[in-house]
Structures are given as structure tokens and as C-alpha cells.
Length: 517
Image 1: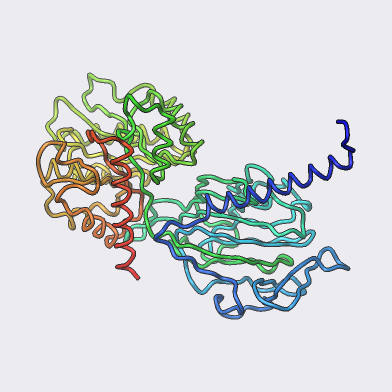
Image 2 (image 1 turned 180 degrees about the vertical axis):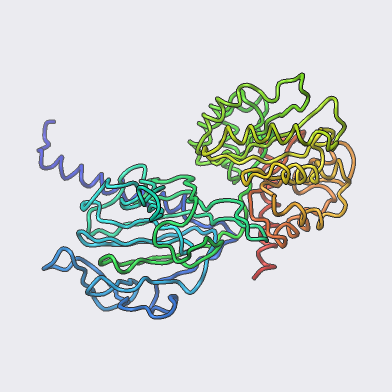
């Protein structure tokens, strides 16, 4: 290249790389970490250590922390505020927040010297590893910087298991400030203390690069504060494995459930799969349900590109013995979707049995257990979908059969529209309380109390039915799982009715949040 020296080109390349890194980090913060409008940030680094509980050991507040000039394995500090570090020795107590958290978005910046090691336990139970990757990279999954640390059982061989390495090594060299941006979902428990859903790192960005997505945690990682899992806990910062410093730590509790949309919203001639999924993202939904085997590969690809989740796959089951139990494509679809935390929604039909006839229970249990065996260890759950005029018609049917299946991976669904259609919308609270220990999914929509489907299923801002009270009852009863927006038969332009329903959802969320403050 005429007029350019190798030295000049090298300098230019370094500047470009630096700018790209800064832009990636800023983008990641805006995408992964910015709370929705109902969230309140909790800042954990200030002028003192008042955000942290008990004896804080050698942890100190500083204005600046850097590698010690005469020892690359130590940190040194200047007076001031805005940074916390674990002192000259780099080995002290773990630092524990006074506040406890469940679901959160978090931003955490850290620096370590050469050879150092730390970590952050979300809810006091699940460690996101901090390590100088120049020290070790691959001794076991989860040890790397950004890794989700392994679990531990002294009776197992090997004792460590279920660690999760980052997708890529996004770490900077020791001595440079780095950042984690995290969306974390805590484990779910019913009112009887039974775990109904595992904890999960929804997204983890390390220095602007996505390193984990939808990683489910079957239990606490090694060194957890608690022997048994809990739905909430403090953030716990490791202080005894080497020098480390933190700054710009904030946590935004997520007080609302995931809100996704049924695929009928975008199943229109004028929308391609790509356009439909983009519309879901632009409208603010967390993902979607899908109702067919056809096109599932394309939908999953588009959801991945848009950072959205496939929450549920709607499938038919046939009780009559002269009919196939389920579509033979189910097995290959399970392989396609394994590891994605998809719930299989089973609608169960029979031409020979009347709606809700318990004479079909034994056959239903047999088929459901067979499907549950097929998905074992592949990251699925199964929920029984009550549908008007199907054999499994009522919420009570879903609960009754779930109990008889007696598998922790199998639960019930409460569909607002089918409940209104089949049962008239009476006695909501006792029915929700009965279903709650088994409830995996809920769907809502605007509605009248009676009428045809055009009355029973409307955009969320339409209809006389009090959806807010329904959501409030769910929350008071302990439901914290995902909620889907039913859109079947709505003829308004998709962009219009999805925007209207999202606006109403936001109003509901703010109102519910204000009741708990």
C-alpha cells in the first residue's frame, strides 16, 4: 500500500480494534443490561461499604485500583471512592450484599492481577467465575473467566460436574478492567417448597460478547452459601482466592414475569417468519409459542438471531387406540430443540370419550409418561393444555391428570380464554390456588365473559373481563412463571394489536409493582 508503512498500519489496526471493543461493550450494556421501565437499580459501590452486611474483613473503598508496579500479582490503590477491593493481601472474607435478590439484571466491572481468582454468586448460590485466563483455560468446564462454575459432590467421580464454559474466551489480560452484563432468573418454588423450575443464566455478556444464553442450573454451584436452593439470596463476592477489585456494580430486580406471544399473532400471509419474529422483538415481547411442526427450524433460527426464546411448542395427543398417539415428527423435533428449555404444551383429544371423562386418565398418563421419557435430560418440560371441547377441557382436568402422571417434569396450564369458554370465568381464586403447585404456564388476553371466540379473545386493552385482578391473584398465590398472550382469531393488523397489548401489559406490570412497594 503506497504511502503507508507497516508501523502506521499496525497503529491504525490497534485503534480500530480498541474502538470496536468499546462499541461492543456499549452495545452489550444497552441490549443486555438496561432495565425495563418498571425496574429500579440498586447501586452497590459508593462512598463506603454500607451496602454490604456484617464484618467486611479487609475490603476497602478506593478511588483507583491498579497493578502494583513492583509486583504483577498484587493490586495497589489510591485514595478516593467508587472502587472496592479486598486489600493488600488479596485474601479476606467474601463480601455479601445486605439486599437479597431473585431475578435480576446486573452490571459488574472488575479487575484482577496476574494469576488471581474470584467469582460472583448470584442469589448466593450460582457462581460466575472470575479468573486470569492466562493462568489456566481448560482444566474443567466452568473454571475459565466467565465460566459458570461446576457443582460438587464428594460421592461422585469426578466430584465436580455440570460446569459451563463460556462460548468464547472474551477475557482481557490481567490488569485491565472488564465487565459482566447478566440477566439471571432464580429458581422457582411453589408454596409447598417444591422446586418447579431451575435457576438460569438467561444471558451473560463478557466485555460486550455473549458468552452464555439460557444456561439452566440443576442446583447450586460449589461453595454456595446455602445447602438447599432458595428463590432469593444476596450477591456474594469471593474475596479469599486472590486480589480483586470491583466498580460500577448495579443490580436491577426484575419484578415481572416473562411475557411472550402466541404464534397466531404472526401467522399471516403478509408476514414471513423473519418479519414476524422481528415484529415480536420490536414490540417488546420476550419470545413466542409455536403451534406446528412445519417451519420450526426457520422459526428457531430467526428467534436466535433476534435474541428471543421459544417458550412452548403446542402438540396434539390422541387417546383413541385406533389413532396414532402423536405425530411421528415429535422425536426429531425433540432432538432439534433439546437444551432450549421449551415446554411441550399437550392438547389431548378423543372422539370416543366425552370432555373431562376420567375414563381416559389411564391412557393419558401412559402417553404423557412415554413422551416424558423421550425428553428426559434434554431440557424440556411438559404442560397439559386445557382446550374447550377437547377431552382435556378444564383446568381441573389438567391438574387431575398431572397428579396421576406424578412426574416433576409434568405440570398444568391455565388458559384464560378456554377457562372463560368452558367454565364461564367463575371461582377464579380457589381454582388458581388448586392449580398453583402444578402450574407451569399461563395465557391471557382481553376478553368478554361470554360469546364467540371473537369476544373471548381480544387485544389486552379490550373487553370487560378484569385481567388485572386475574394477574394480581396469580402473583399473590405465588405464580412467577412465564405468561403468554393468546392472539387466535384477532384480525387487527399484527403491529397494531401487539403494540396495544404490550402497552396494556406495561400498565399492569407497573400497577402490580406499586402494590408490592
